[in-house]
Structure formats: C-alpha cells, structure tokens
Amino acid sequence: MRETRKRDRRGLQATLVRPTLLAVALAAILGTAPGETAAQEAVDVAGTVVDDGTGGPIEGATVRLADASGSARETITGPDGAFAFAQVAPGTHTLAVRRLGYEMLSTPLEVGAEAPPRLDVRLQPQAIPLEPLDVDVEGRAPGLVESGFYDRMEEGWGVYFEPEWIEASKGGFVRLRDYLWVLHGRAPLSRCGAIPVYLDRRPIGTTPGWGTSGLHPARPPRSDRIPPLVEELSVSDLGAAEVYQAGTKIPMFAWTDATMSCGAIILWSDWTARLPEIPKIEVKLCEPGGLPGEVALDGFVEDEVTDVRLPAAHVSASYANPADPDGLERVETVVRTDSLGRYRVCDLPGGAIIHLTPEYGPHAGGPTVAIAAAGGEALRLTVPVTPPASITGVVLNEATSALIEGARIVLVDTDFRTVTNSGGRFSLADLPPGSYTIRAVCAGYTGPAQEVELAEGASVAVVLQLRSTELARRGTCSI
Image 1 (tube, helix red, strand yellow):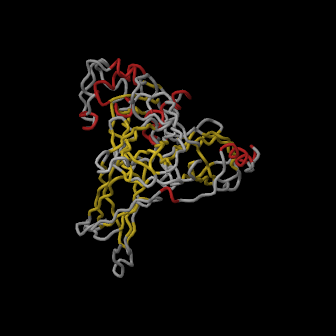
Image 2: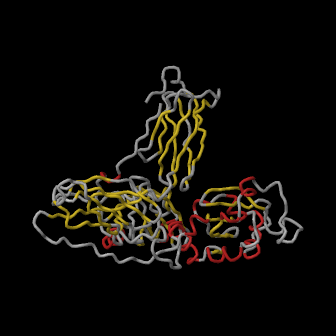
Image 3: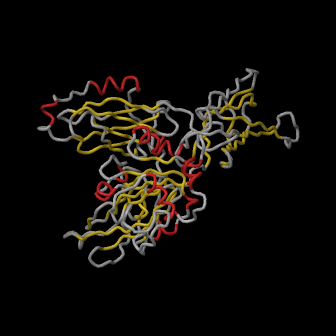
C-alpha cells in the first residue's frame, strides 16, 4: 500500500516584500552593541523565498548567512520556500539568496537579542541557461553556479579546479582514485590517513593524505582505506573539483569534525559541470494581429521536476484548419519562449482546439490540449529536463528488528509522504533533487529523523528505526 502526494506549489499565498524594500526592512531589525554580544544568547532566523511574479514559493533556493568574519552557513529552501538557521549569534550578517532562473539577492541583516520577524524574500525571474541549444559558447556551467562553486572560488575559500582545467589534465587516467593525486599535487592536503571525498554534495569515502605513503604522488598507493566507490569511479565522471585545507572555510554540506581536522576534496560530476552557459537569447513574443475572431494563447514552459522556467524552448502548436471542410488539414506553427520562459501563439481562431507540445534541447514534454479563448489564463507546459530522484527504505523495530507495517513516512516540511506496506517497505518517487529530512511516524513508537541528500536521478535507500514506548501496546500504526 502506498500513498504519494505532491503539492501544487503554485497555490501557496504569502505576504512578501520587494527586494528593494528588503534591505530597509532588515535594517530596521535592531541589533546590539558589540560589547553586549557575548552576553546575549543565539536566536533563530527564518523566512520564505517566493517568486516576484507569481507569488509562489521557490523550492531549491540556496540561502547563505555569513557573519562579519566571513564564516557562512547555507541551507536549501523546501517546496514551501521556507528556510531557517538555528542558533545565530547576534551581530551583523549578510543574507544572500540565489536560485537558478532568478536574480541573486544579497542584503545586510542585523541580528539582535531577540529573533527577528520572519523574513519574506521576493526573487526576480532571470534567464536560465540549463543546456546548450542552438548556440555553442564557453561559459560557466549552470550546475556549478547553483552549487556555489564560483561564489566560493571568488571568495578564495580553497583551491578550485574549473572544468577546462580538469578536462585538460585528466588525459591518460582511468580511475578516479589515481587522478586524486593530481589534485594533491596542486593543493597538498594534510598527512591525515583518511581525507573525506565528496561527489555532488554526497560523501563517497576517503583518500590518503599527502605524505602518508612512501610512493611518489604519480604512483598512488593501493590502500585498503580507499572505499569501493572511490575505487570504482572513472575519471570520466569528474567535471570540476574543490580542495580545502584543514581549518579553512568549508561548505556546510561538508562541514564535519573530520573535514575541519583534515580538509576535504569536493568533486563535481561531469554532468554538473559539462553544461555550458548559453547567452541571453532575445526572443520577441508575437503580437496579435487583432483580426475579428482571432485570439492569442500565452503561457510558460518549465522543468517538470524543479519548476524552473526554460528560456528559448520550442513550443509546437497545431489545430484543424477552419477553412478545410473535411477537417483533415492541420495548421502548425512553432514559437520560442523568451528569456523568462514565456511563449505566445498568436492569431488563433477563437474556440479552436489547440495541441501544444514543448521541447527543450533534446527533451520533449507531453502534448497538452487547450481551447483558444480570449482572456484565458497562462497555460503551463512542462518538459522533463531534470531527472527526478527517489527514496526507498524499510522501517524496523529497533529492539526486535521486526518490520513495521503502516508507518507513515514523511519528508519534513513537504507534502511528500507514503505508508509502509505489509513488508515494512516504502518508496517515494518523482522527488526534486535537494536536501530532505525523512521521518517515520507510528503511534506508540518514537525515533530520530534522517538527513537525505538527493542528486539528480539518484535513488537513495534508508533504514528508519523506531523505539517502542509505554503506549506501544495500545497504539498501532495507521494512515
């Protein structure tokens, strides 16, 4: 038995402020004098990020909070656009919000003795380069831009290897573990025996530190401490890299005791780094001719999973030719979306049944049928550009290891949920990539939540354990 629901993120209403007013609103939040900061307790900072045009919540936006020393924390907004930072020390901070397809927002934030009011942030839509279309230019990969790679590089947190450098230097290598010594040579790490390695935000194991082997760096050791995933990956999977020394600033997703003590190697897959940026494509939407009986059809083309608007996408429209008495001849036209992902098909006969099919590069969306009518609402078309992710797993009784049927599985702060079947198993499909907190809920039981990081197209398996309470005999799991 499985129940999976996905919320329509466009229906949420929120009270918002414009970016130009956000700085004023934030500046009005009273801080404290430097001498009083040490005596004050940390507070929570929370808010919501929304689309300036539609008012809908923006999922997957990266929210960064940096203090006056430059130390920063990052989080990702959920489907409701919400974000939160716990235990923020009073003082002067900088709040930055970015999301592929929107203009970046950065504003000062004064945190005082009391938690500031909930922050409401509007982002302005911007052209979104996702894949090369009809042009071939060099630029920054959108996946790396969204990951914060270039932001950290410009701030000089560590040593950065851009896609061009990686591509030029990995010739002759087959295994990723061997190539890691090339990165060691450019940015030698500590002598720790196990330096954490990440790929697309996920830990994939460790590699020996510089100087832990008597072999020359060009001939890396065959160590049992190299995990199978690092051992098995091909160098062709690599697109970019970041290397951080011990004790330096490290991205929040890799900030652990091990990385603070030994440093870290953060790798980005070829898929993340290979998509070149396309220039802003100027597409002028058609203007209706104004002839009697003719109307125009407007709308947006978006990524099916992330709801990112797609610029320069193609929309094919076809309808029966009203001049053909047999109704067999069809009129077909193709238009392109502008830099904000908007399309318009002009001079359609009123009341005609229109078949619309969107395409974005090699990706095609399913056909949509609409009736051409004056003053109609914008019609949303979707293309499956981003591969959806999924989570599967089981729920166990911690004490007996017995499988628990009927436990509710919830992704915290989202409307993604399901229920374990008779075998205690569950599956959540069609998930946008990002960070999630997953929890199992069952009457008479308690248990911790788990953090799950989902890359594009990834399938992650988890085991959730519940402890029975004194109410366990009286309570049973139910949907």
